[in-house]
Length: 297
Ligand SMILES: [Zn+2]
Image 1 (cartoon, helix red, strand yellow):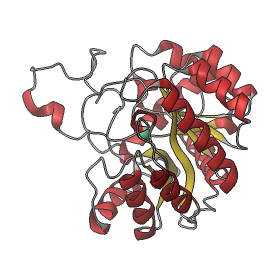
Image 2: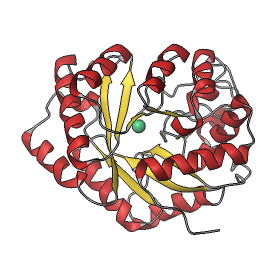
Image 3: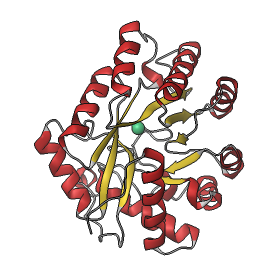
Image 4: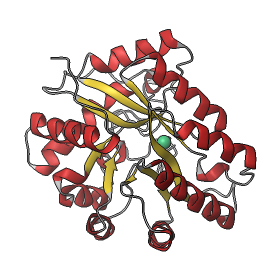
């Protein structure tokens, strides 16, 4: 789920409300294939509409045709956690992350914790997430969110898998709870939403910053500054689909294939070739999620 956008557009880019009628609902066009494969490090295949092995395969085929060869599909509650873990066994291009989203922690039951512990150990579950703090919405009180976040940090350490953080309007509390608990070996800020100053502090701690569609938005200068300073080995790219569709298709339905737009944007922003940016995030994804080297040409 997104950290900093309601998906309603608003940067004035691309289409304008009402002008083109239904064009805002059409999926973005298929981009030119990337020169090297990448992993979409954070997506929600179920929320994109995938249900069964066939619909998962269709969505990942669409992504693979433009070079997005593997995806990490992320849960936000227990039924979604069960689904993502299963989906990852249907297709060898799909991996899973499991957690209860901070906005859903008002009732974080023993049975939820038990289910997550089991799922977290499955081999195709490659991260604990998305967890963290969301002070934008008030579905769950801060105390409940903080307790659940601490519990997920412990789980990530127990199973030795990366922690995938959702941080919306809660930067300082997220960082201080990580310090207080002791951060797991690998921490990923999914859909990083801070400025260069915050990025610098995260980088210093060794955290990984994952950039989604918002980095491409016209009004995202502080975020673009942040994306410029992250060392190559601490960079990931993601869609957070179906939310946060990259510019100039903001507001339209997002899918893993659209991460190609963000890869191209980040390459230009960082002054490297698209191929180099793609190889960087592919290598990082393999190392961070333990995916193993992709065998296909
Ligand atoms: Zn998400």
